[in-house]
Length: 424
Image (tube, rainbow, N blue to C red; front, side):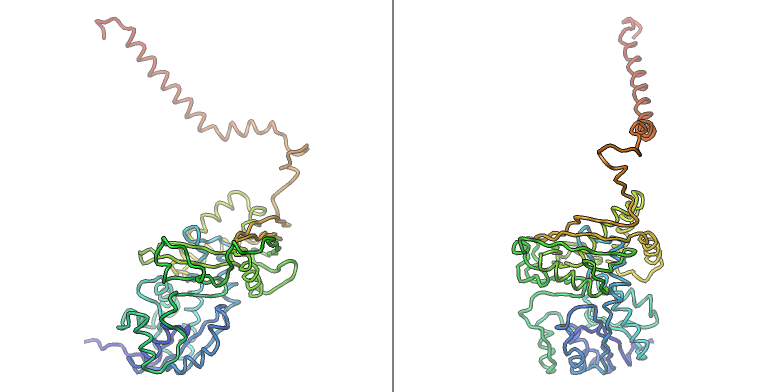
């Protein structure tokens, strides 16, 4: 008979929130193991990270490892996703989804460094994140078993979890009054639960944290110019900045103008629908600017190919299958196409909108000499007739054949009508 697995040391993806605050003592009490808490700084903000190492230790962790992943998160994950144009179900800019592969990768790296013999996460059995984490574990550390407490323990409500911590004198900032489930990183913040569970109710204003109400945004609006090299942002208004500073700046300015709010009922990977409110101010501006640059640099076939690729890439990101050959192949292709995405894009921000108002590139395919409505010396309009005849040739042939067939049928009908009565 197979003996039940008892881990000796567990690597836990730790956020310091209610779930993972309960998981540390639960792992220790259930298995008598050590817990290595892994904190991934993906830009969720200093408020969530303040005192987190001490909190993890007080909760029962043997060690807490904090990894600054902000730059890698943007340059290896979020910005490539933006270059592909990936958007889930036409609205969601995939902020939570795109962070999971790098968090899980960091967790595996720490597990291997610390000699852990198991991995653990705080994802519920209803959500997408359990799939994203465990798919990454399978790709990077298939030999390590996974402990998912939400699928094992008897804690079923927020109140029970708070009582669990209270009995053990473990501090936690969560409370029964904090009704929203939130996930934040430098790319976005998501909000679920509470009043949002009724899709007929509008999101209360207290949901939003990064963006102001577009109605109350400045009447003057704002304009900024983003510079790109091979599709990656390099500067704002001519000032070179690193990747993290660029997105932090776009988040701040976009948030002031109410840009990037999304209220969405989406189809989860596990089958159910869920309602989420998302704020992605910087990402919204960045993706709008990239599409403006594409308009200059990509020909029609490349543009349509990129649009088709975006659907596949969005599904890969949403489902958490990042560490796969197909994702690598799609990105290799998109990266190659994006080599020509150099230039500047001016974006106008006004009361919740971000709209391209100007674009320029040394690799532009736009030619004013050809496109002008004025007099030109490079385009012979009489050439269009031959092009149109060839372009429409299949349709023309189909119509001619249909007309000929109709004529034969009509002729036969007329012949029957004119035949003597006795021969009918």
